[in-house]
Image 1 (cartoon, rainbow, N blue to C red):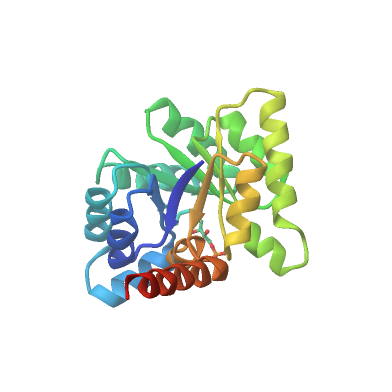
Image 2: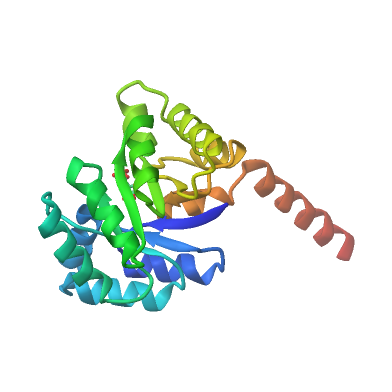
Length: 218
Ligand code: E4P
């Protein structure tokens, strides 16, 4: 399973990257906006730096909603770095955009996906990734992980190559469940990456081993 970090915060990306387990990055307009405000840098500068920090797909989202404008915006973002993946919002015009970009060799991530039919359209158009937002479904009392499972089943039925990227992850259990059902990628906030390593029994165990070792050495 690939691990992407879901942030535009350069400090967080630097720290996670130094752990050696990062395969890519996802940003969105909210996350990039926060980093622009924090650093005073512009979005292209931030995306370029992210691409220098992580050698893998870096999702950058387009904001237009009409096909011609979406394509212009996407081509412009793709010029920043070879690893830029265009995040295309799941709207009707987005499907043609994904197909056009695929024909040009530009990778795409269809975002804000909340149903199997949306995921099916994205795969038919040749999206590189599809992003079901599981936390936002959980928030409205739908089990987000059920959607991931259904998309995986449909993609397997037809041998689609589109990778299922589990997004809107809120806690370590989301990551574990996504791995258990075979999702291709999890995009994880930095705070959740930090939590993945922790277990209270590990801490208790380390303390006990150290205390026993100290006693033996006296
Ligand atoms: C995915 O690519 C999105 O950036 C992200 O996972 C959205 O998460 P949120 O629902 O916590 O905002």
